Image 1 (tube, rainbow, N blue to C red):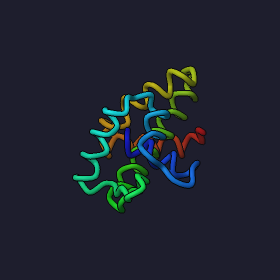
Image 2: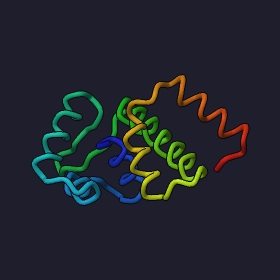
Image 3: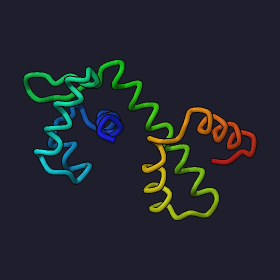
Image 4: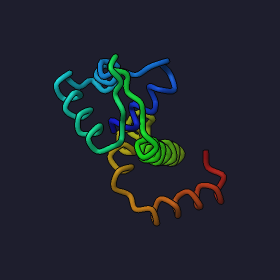
Length: 116
């Protein structure tokens, strides 16, 4: 969820810092700081000397993949009558666990049915 949040914030803001992630996600500074350290050590983000966070190519790939799943699942759930709030919450839970096979089949189904 952190990478997805950084991606979304980077589309809205000229620069993303840990405090922006805290405010967006509603998490404490220590929690975000720990996650930023883990993501940095994992090669998913870079943090410059002023504290600005950028996604590496790998981080961007993971973030975009997750965000696509979030958007598609949310739209699908809303199309079958789930409230926007519940659709968003459920998509967030599922986006990380759904297999590529199932997700790609769902995308094909949505395209065939003209759902959006």
